[in-house]
Length: 199
Image 1 (cartoon, one colour):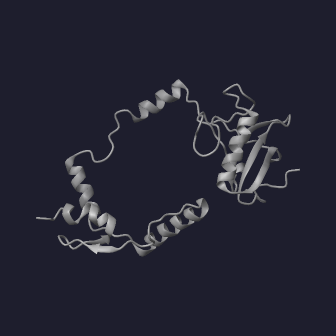
Image 2 (cartoon, one colour):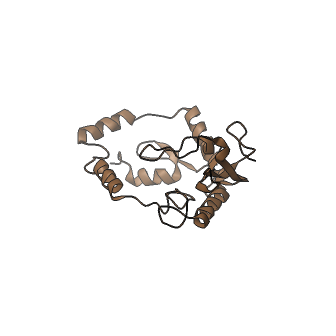
Image 3 (cartoon, one colour):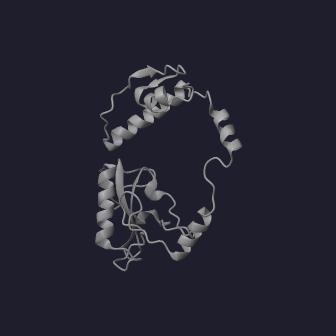
């Protein structure tokens, strides 16, 4: 019996399966929150999540994101992918972090190429470059924006276990040419001997 639903969600990260009426699994996924019960649409707009929510099976929960990635990848390998002829799953990737193992059709490759070919990135003309510079010169982030970004970084570090040897706050220095103050690494890169106002 499946004890979870979109109203009673699994704890932390989890790995789920979509099951056919004959009880075989046809899709393995990793998620958090309502992910297993949300719409899963392919590029051709076909829906793969089952209308009957009793066929959404939570295989494991209370996982870290890394554990969920590993289990998803392992199950896809064991059950096998239909597009590779190794099994019954309609997954188009090998699972885990990123889109490893995806097979793009020639039509999709052509479509992506046409979409990006000839596209100009960045400032289009010198006037455009000057206009962008003028629009952003002197802009300062509010304390709320800085605090929000700091909190987001802290949460990411806590979730992933990522750490850095960089000190919590860099030494601040002042450029002798333009008077700008900032962290020592960025200031020595863009100011001092490299300062635009240096004569």
